[in-house]
Image (cartoon, rainbow, N blue to C red; front, side, top):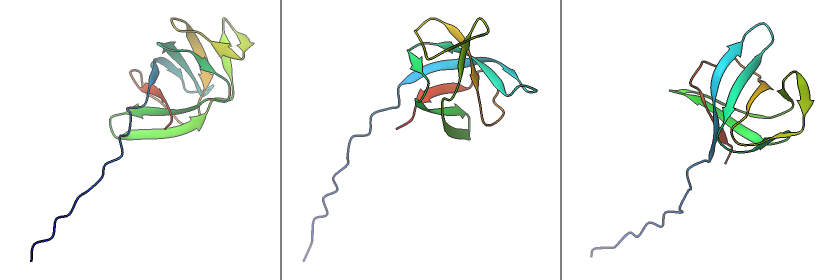
Length: 95
């Protein structure tokens, strides 16, 4: 007797990219992110570069050395990061 196995796949949307790392200041642990979408303090994001990936919640954003709560698309902002990141690292909203 042949049984049919039907698998249901839940559609998993691709995480929305919010920016890309333009520079990393290792002594400060701060990354400069060129934003392609809005970003705010409290957002959960994923940093991905090849197989190096980590997730964190945004705790601090600066624009022109001033703390801000949110930044809009097209801005370059400084973000405190938990781990070292490389230029070109993709920043996406966490799933």
